[in-house]
Image (tube, rainbow, N blue to C red; front, side, top):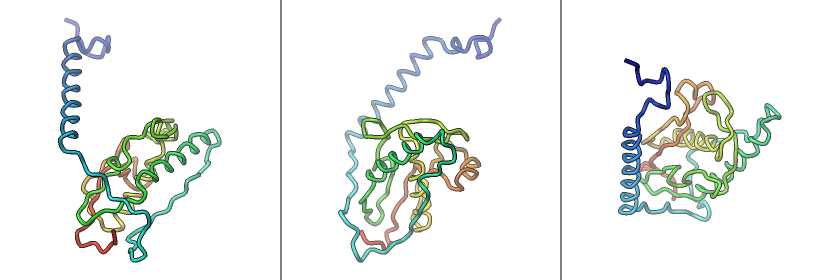
Length: 190
């Protein structure tokens, strides 16, 4: 009796009923998320027009925008810089209240062409991949380092598409696509 596995015909590995069940489950989960979001809308982050003069700098980070290691990647690097501009503008001016949790994805949302993101360079499994929103990991990495240096509580950290070892090789930090919390006793103004 022949196996229906991926050996002979991978497209036949799942029959129509299994695909239908998967599709139905995915739509139920999407519908559930929509209902939860509608019933419990998250308040927008508080924004400030300018940093108060009395504010205390808890941490800072700096990294090069342009590396131009390979001229063939110039268009992707320029796209990365544009994406960083869009992402930085999306989180600029956010002030966290004591105990409030910051989520990059809640603040900036998904990168899309409709929001002004362009094709930039993304590093995936050691390869440069052109993708819409490519390069924003540079900002999320900086946020991760800043949160760590400032002593903020990291409440969720995801490595995105990179393994822990690959992240250490590439940038010595994790791509923080998660969330952090401002301590209640933090002396930062806001």
